[in-house]
Length: 467
Image (cartoon, rainbow, N blue to C red):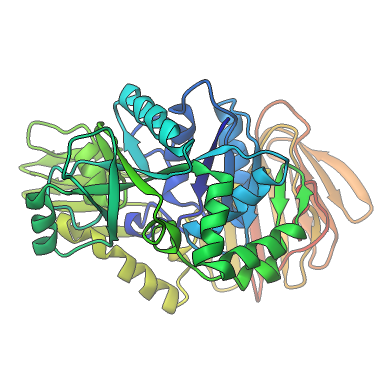
């Protein structure tokens, strides 16, 4: 039995400002009408088990909603309170599946990959399964086509031609000169981030080389519990876990590592330049999305989110326009974006974490204006959904219904509001907004007060069991 393990905890810093901590790249439509997370699941072979998803706690409702959109079942959704890299995440998956008196084959997949040849991908999985059944730990490798500095590499023994090869080492993202040497040598693959092995084999090898990771994950998983569709860990124990990738924790140390070639057009969508490479381009080698007008522009990627973007006489640029941030960068420097995100975090800028539009399990809100002592939001509530029963210590709210019918709880009163009707929620008053109709509800919310932060919410009841 093969169980896909979907690793979906990344933050996508190098695709800022489109990718943010709360809404990262794997949940954004980058190359098609489906997201990378959804594409990872949709390209799986039909004859394997439902996927087990490992994701950040903050992304749990995004994962559940995106699974629902593609009508995909799952074997569970495990929530990490904090990202600890791939080795701990895979350990949690192995413990979850092995503890159910099973020893399944784990097919480990990240959610930022572009794979165009699905038939070849399935063939590589079949080959990897045959080898993994013999107790081997298999990585899928991609033959490099250029000296790429944004990918990790796998050094392999190419002394003979075969369906698979022994792994000699894993190499981190190299400099351009070293990447050229790797390409010229002929004995390096790009590390695809796809692995296959039995759960028991992984746990045994991990115990040899990284017993601290295994111990912390066991303690954390032992005290886990089910919350709606999610598995919640013992967060205090998991936070103690060392942070390491599977490459360095196990794969480069074990004597059982094997690489199987993945003969497919593959890309790790880790930067704007890499996304530009896989996008459809015009006759001047430009890729664009949104309301964009170009004149004498070459080799560039331009993305417009909510307004017209015009570029004239430029080349080799990345221009990304969102509702609250504009990026203009040399395409070749897009790998450096993580430094900008770190600077935003250091300066406590909200643009590193949130978009202007913030998604919630009941819908979303768009912060359209703010100033000293006020904030204006457009709030969209899905049919049949409702916000938590709550109150605020520092702000009052005015609600105006734009579309739909709202059921309002305000103190002891429960009443309906229809289009063009409004109400006032005083500071400290218990209240709730509910959409019991079959069409979306849209309201304008005007907040007033000395403090308007999202943490000024005291939840008394919540359908989604948030604190």
